[in-house]
Image (cartoon, rainbow, N blue to C red):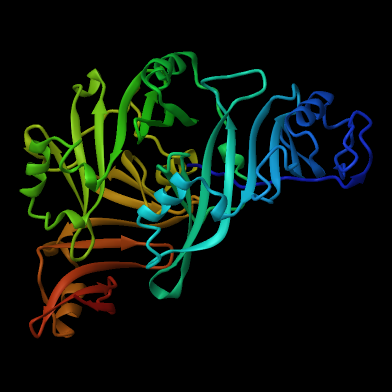
Length: 455
């Protein structure tokens, strides 16, 4: 889910807004004439008895920071709130409220504990938990009905002693619907709801809402529109092209589905892969369904944890697939990616085409086809580029690299290697042997061994 940098400003003016009747309000903020009467009336109607109210103007929005009255929210939450209103007409759009973990719905607590973040081994709670309400763009009402998600922040120590944080988005049913690593604290400005185009709205109404599902987020980008939804207890990611035509749906599945919801022939084909070891090594499962322009195909992607790294295995009714299936996102464009990421790729890898995108531990993974090479780029929640990597035959390693491997007493143990670029350095990663022991080496283009990790 996308969050943008918060650039807000507050004019500290101690004034009493005459149109307000609540005596507990602080009323500091912009000039009273800057916050429209429509906003003031809408705020008081939605949050009667709110205390400690201050205002800021952020573009076309008036944003109230306040303490909700006990009658509005459960007193146990006890945190502050930020509510966003369109200043021109007073329409409510979004409210974020600080809560504690114990105040989360039981289903959300259970969903978190059942996720890979909840076992306490690699990740720990930071204490930041929010309840995020956004205007329901599919079921609009005069008072502004809401779609609710809960955001839980966790942190983990990673290699080199660095620390990363991940914001986890859960639906009220406890479904993990989003992960954002190292996001900026922007009061969720990037989560403001977007109204879908008419054709997309009609499709979502008949395929999601009327089937009992909910649309959680709509993100219109230059090449089309991405939609996140929940249906029948599963997270869906949908893509519509610039002509508002549905292109594909990605649906999340889980290990428990291997002997039920996932067809037996698909599961059997997965187990025939050379990369499959046990069900426990399956990290993520995704079903992809496409439109007629893409052959009305259905395939499955299984992310497997292997000895060294993660491997994606693709399966359809015909069995194992040689690689990721081609997917035309419509209108001759690329698969969706945030505009700033797409701009970075266009600058750094001219002529590249985005062919895949995913999230892993809150990091955005983007696959591109550049100079006929499939490359994977990694970005954090601030859209900062972390690294790019791609495979190459070991026979193409530079002479200095092979000489450095030999000088260290190692011999190659695989006919493939990885090249990794990052803002700080570039290096090769190779699997080697030494004295009957397996290692993974990181070695720079000049043949200097940077790190040797024993298997």
